[in-house]
Amino acid sequence: MGIYIYNKEQIKRIENACLIAASVLDEIETIIGAGVSTHEIDTLARSAIRKSGASPAFLGYKGFPAAVCTSINEVVVHGIPSRDTRLKSGDIIGIDIGVYYKDYYGDTARSYAIGSVGEDIESLLNVTRESLYRGIEKAVAGNRVSDVSHAVEAHVTRFGFAPVEEFVGHGIGKNLHEEPSIPNFGDAGKGPRIREGMVFAIEPMINAGGRDVEVLGDGWTVITRDRRFSAHFEHTVAIVDGKAQILTSGKNFN
Image (cartoon, rainbow, N blue to C red; front, side):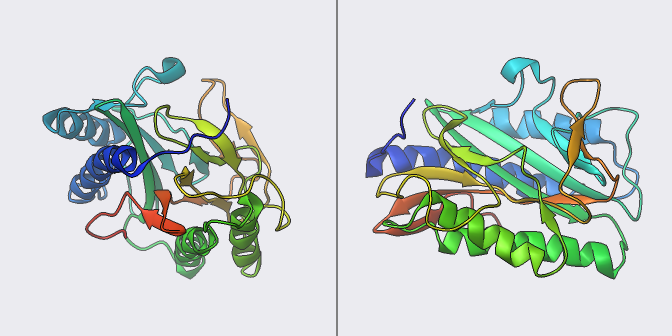
């Protein structure tokens, strides 16, 4: 599969899916807190997505059993919601959501602290979020894909954090996952050249400790090998008029 180039009408349709995803995360934010189960988060997401006339893109994708990924503490990505898993003060949770709407996909993720988490984890959350925008700044026509990757890694390593290497961002639009891959590490000046009309999901997954991860026996849940915390933020962006336009803006995440 090559890299799709989307026209402005198609980008608008991708944005419509993205805005639904962002609005559902906004709604989820209103219930997140100690005592809430990840099953309750998933139930709200399913309902909100369908009220918008869309479908949960992750539900059933390669067998994934939920509408959202709920990744707590040392879980990097692909955490599976459960009735038995309730948030508690001191946790962090990454919530990743994908939406399919009128033939196009949108994808976004945010991480949250539950109560007080300490300065080191607050720093992990802030730096991971900042690295997303450092990457987006480099997503301009004429740059290379690895310019985005390098910007993310350069920012987080300054603070002693480490990007995950096994899981990366991606193109998105007609399909949930398209070319090119968007790693969160690497040298600048390499990979495909960024062009007008490309659409990417840029998603730093950043560990407080080492880069290494492992997948649990359920085949989905990715955790840090050293069991230290990990954070995840993601925006879908389109290259419009030469620079990245964020398509997944929400009330508190733009």
